[in-house]
Length: 264
Figure (cartoon, rainbow, N blue to C red):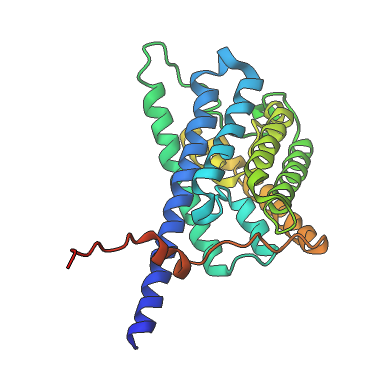
């Protein structure tokens, strides 16, 4: 392998690591801000406050980490991007693993903070774990919860793909995505505690224990299905092509400061 080939391989590996780190940190932030607000401040800020916290977490991460990885922060969004033809299988696997890892760390941080309060009592819900039936905040049955998670994920991922397509004004994508995430939580918190994100559901389920783990399948199957259908719909509408971003080869030379030379 020549020097140019080694350089391209090094850039490729660096890109993968950066993207995985960005997805892990972004998902950690989503869980810390969203689940954290529900667990620590929920009684004071209510459903509206929790929904806004989730929306703000995605909005801020979109601008901070979007240029690195696209700020999916969600296996359902990644599934939608894959179905739309924006990413490859390798990226799909890396993103999902990083997102779940970030969500687990975020959940652990929320738990450690919450346990620091003298009045903290572990709730049966287990850190805002998602559930249906008797574990639904509004006692919604399985069919209602399945439908809600599928449909709300579909619209959220469709908005993500549409607002980041080359047809949309790129500077407003984060705002549209953050507002959409707020909206789906306003609808869904009383139904399932709102997932639309399998990674976000997995961390709290591990804390909640047996019942949450038994119901976790829904919060993987429904969002992934809704996200994949959104990706196919984006193809149908011609929104599958993302806005142009500079490649790693273009970014690297610009990122290096010029070497100062001594005057002759």
